[in-house]
Image 1: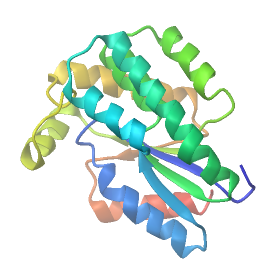
Image 2: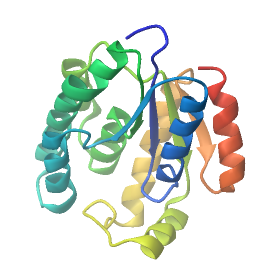
Image 3: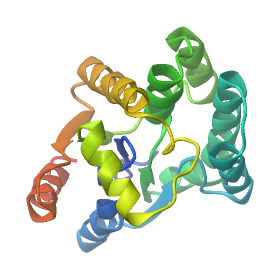
Image 4: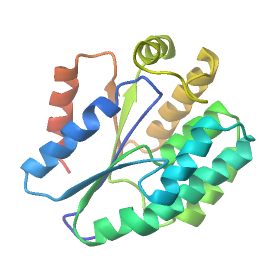
Length: 203
């Protein structure tokens, strides 16, 4: 990674509002004279996008789900994230390994030590420089999701699942306070974007 490149991720339960800000944030980065690539997980490459469709729409066990997510992540890292950072390009990614810890760990109940093993195997030397965690109570998030789209396998889960996912996110953020910035997903868009812009100055 060159000195000027940054790896920034956006996290949160489905419906927390993070995806509404990803492209806007990238534009702010471009406005400061940096090259930026916007991507997502699972996804970001042809192979990883195919895996995304399987993970979101096909029934599978907890471990198969986690292994597929990390397989897609490996390809994403090899083909897009690492080359971009090496070239001095900022990477803004909608979800990364924190999502696996939250969804497969907190939500599904996969042992965190197993996820940590996969994390060390796939990207032992790379973590985001900044992670924005959009935090919102699961019931409000559910109402937002229902208003805008049909549910995938994850979005079809009950409130208790998202309560566990949210808690896993908060614990992950507490363990890495220098990396995470928690944002209140219930706040107006203008308020959240002001906080994002203020935070960007410190990157």
